[in-house]
Length: 495
Ligand code: BES
Ligand code: MN
Ligand code: ZN
Image (cartoon, rainbow, N blue to C red):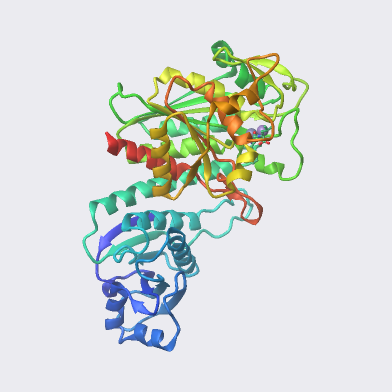
């Protein structure tokens, strides 16, 4: 999908579909007024007849208006001017692209940013780009007869006034974000028999090949053995697939500048191990590598944008399988940090691979570390599918992440990391156990990770409820790539 922005008069434009707004009560937007004038009041007439009342997210498609160069004009209801909340703005954008995508138009031109539709022009532009890309994304590469690709190939945002530099910048950056999200979604939707740890490593190496600014390294199990990653290696014991520890180093600033490290959980399939999961919906555990996929998507976006900062991606990846060799409940392992862990439930494996990756991350002398993981079912119970869970040992970082999530509409909600929860992880036989019981399951998982992140500024994102949809709309969402890229963009502006 191509995106562009330009200034121009709506009646003179040639394109497959021209989109102009109508406010509640039938008041025409400026662009709609210009169309109405040349089209012998066709728009005012149909509004007077009651065919369009401007209610938010309603649409009306018109063909071959007299005096108008373009083939189709789509009227979109914008609701009450100046009173739009974010959700209604998004409903309008979804309805708009849904209506455009129902036509054979290859290109569309939208007049939506001029008159304060929604929060502000930058926000609307960003969400329009994300919505357009979302609707043309297909996940049918493994069908023998893939569905027809979307007709829409290019979207132009037209403005009556000269577009600002901020708008142009937002367009470029959000377009790169959508390509990063597409990579994330494509990888995440692949089944576990294709997307193995070896496959993820190959993808990371390919990203390094495609971008000079990215250097990819892949460590093998024997390397991890030498590093003392007994916790990570305990998870892969039951699998026939070799585990990998992938690092991607993006260098966009002076080498001496401390990097922001993103650590992504890469369990390519989570059966639960010996603590086997129940059968229903177990297929969705192919999505247990969404943290890893979001790190790859974010790094691709960052490299395309050429952001002036240093970012490192660290991806511990393996399968969690039962077998004669698999780790058993009660087994005790030694993590890279030296701390010992009693594994009471082999299904709490994410924290076991992450803790060693977090200890390993110290070697990059990080400014900040953010880990991203489909870590707990309890997070889905707590926050549903709207917000990702967030924990941090640094209030400033927490605030920056929350702000970036709001800006990108990829929202997070902070949960407590208080020491009061720590005793739930006490073990009679080791330094800690890997589960804290049912109560506060998301929090005790984060508290476990906190024991390995004391030496740097750190945040943890639990994306179990937001990385993928279930049921009829089953599929990866590409979250939290918008949040992560926005945070990184903001970090370059702060310097
Ligand atoms: N990958 C799962 C978490 C998960 C569950 C993600 C549902 C998405 C949807 C994780 O490895 C896991 O199994 N967690 C356990 C932890 C428990 C054993 C303490 C869980 O949430 O049940
Ligand atoms: Mn698990
Ligand atoms: Zn898992």
